[in-house]
Image (cartoon, rainbow, N blue to C red; front, side):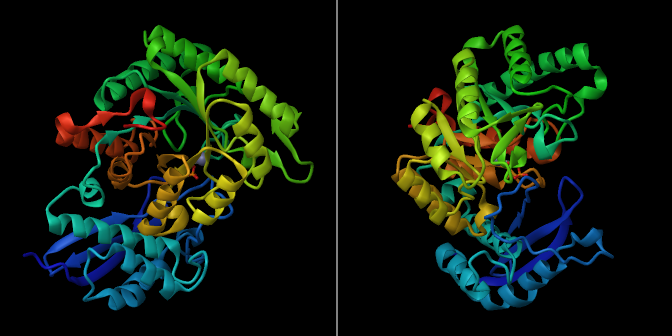
Length: 425
Ligand code: PGA
Ligand code: ZN
């Protein structure tokens, strides 16, 4: 019988893909088995997200250091959890929440708490000798459809495109491996098309690996994407999605949206979305309106037959999601563990979503490390959909490559969600 007793917890400051500091936590069991996890961070964040504790010391990393959060793990949380059973994830997470004592984890920092929470889960899986996805859910078997955000704008790029992510989804692929193959085939055609029109510099990429081109508005990116898909020979296998991240182009003062030199009120914007959906197989939109407009989200969800995902709207928070469910706002939740700060609370939010017939889309953050933990989480949740960037650069490829490993490990038991990505079986 292995021992499950936590014997040591240690955190350190590491850097993410932007070169910004973040927390890495190690949880040791019986002095021998380790679980390690990194904490990702956002740039296009919702205002209701849990608190990321930064040092604010301008002499280090321009104030972005996380030594206070690291210290909170090493000297506050760690000593408290020595001797606990590492498999008691829920008790541990709730204890850390209580130690912090605030609604948004301001005291200890969501980055400190989440590092420990995820490392606890990894350590428990390692002691049990099984993969994390299977430790969390023995019935885990769904390989997700990846949402490939090939053209990037908004806060994640240095261009003038307001909409953050233009996405294609290889729903007609037969496996995750096949979905990745199609993705690269399409992306290479897209790259050539971008060079043809805008030159080689336009193939520089944004935070999540999509091209950061001088394209404008909403129609031009769709024209490019659909032509690339056609030329690559994958028309029948691809549908489209967007993360509008509408907060970043909404003007609170005027209550209007500013897109490509024009202003839109809510109704005009919804009409624009309807027109896009009429022309292209658009199946999913994330944050199509600003984060406080529950009423607008419910109008849109009732009016358009597609998946409407709440990211900044819900921030992986059961209380925000409950409001959404009550008002029929959106029909899916974006799942980002660091928005709420513990694995347990994020899993609770996902469960609440499922119980209310909402979909769950697991997501990267724009500031990632090589840690592929979300790949295990998306399979554990049988969620059917993951947003984890284009397959370039280590912090994105690590997630795709982990999903290839999981696909192989599951073998005949694995099912690629494909066209059933909202309700996979
Ligand atoms: P973020 O961006 O990680 O910077 O929040 C991703 C998103 O908005 O989905
Ligand atoms: Zn988003």
